[in-house]
Image (tube, rainbow, N blue to C red):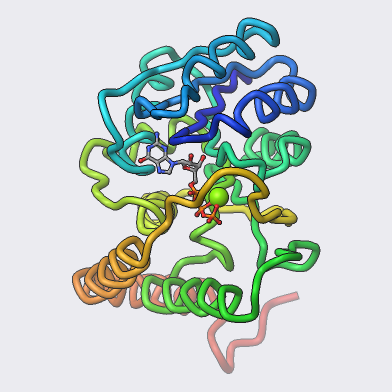
Length: 261
Ligand SMILES: Nc1nc2c(ncn2[C@@H]2O[C@H](COP(=O)(O)OP(=O)(O)OP(=O)(O)O)[C@@H](O)[C@H]2O)c(=O)[nH]1
Ligand SMILES: [Mg+2]
């Protein structure tokens, strides 16, 4: 299946060349689209040079820093326009090991609409995170999963592969969230469309070079959005659950009736 890996970058001059080289080694046939927001540190130029070296890399340069969600929306729109079968999300700071990508792609090829690289299923890990950061992420994920009925242990993970058709069906231009909220919103929309979500264990390596662009604003945004979607969609989730219960009752054998032999 034709695959496009979308790599959002903002000030990843120290990481992007190695990401591209390791990506090419892990998935020789995949194409790559770097979406750079005019990083002042020259990330785009380095990406172009490393891209020419490894092949199959395009660089989209946008006018200014507009956020992770917006970068993925632009990259995915381009991937859909060009007719790719699978669209991949991956951070460009080496937190996500390119060597794990073939496993995510196999999950989509095997029938998943969304394959999430998960830190919170057996086999997954975050070796270098502090207890505080781990707890925040773990409980944030639990909250999203309970409030939205999301069938995923790690809906904030940014390492994932989508079947393009699933992305085409979720009305991408109306996805508004950024950062963690963007990841949750995308998974939630796939689930609400009846899509199949599969999780694959990954080891999340903390970035060694460059600076984090995550902020408390992004955490608060995710929390508020999840709470709002939870309240907004409660009636429709109840209706769906009632219909599922009724369908189960209708298909279960009736009590007191002995099946004929
Ligand atoms: N194009 C673009 N990319 C961005 C923007 N903000 C972040 N990114 C990229 O998105 C990816 C994830 O951002 P990080 O800052 O590493 O966020 P994080 O991985 O949640 O946080 P850390 O654990 O601190 O690294 C990286 O590849 C960033 O370069 C943005 O505004 N525009
Ligand atoms: Mg990171």
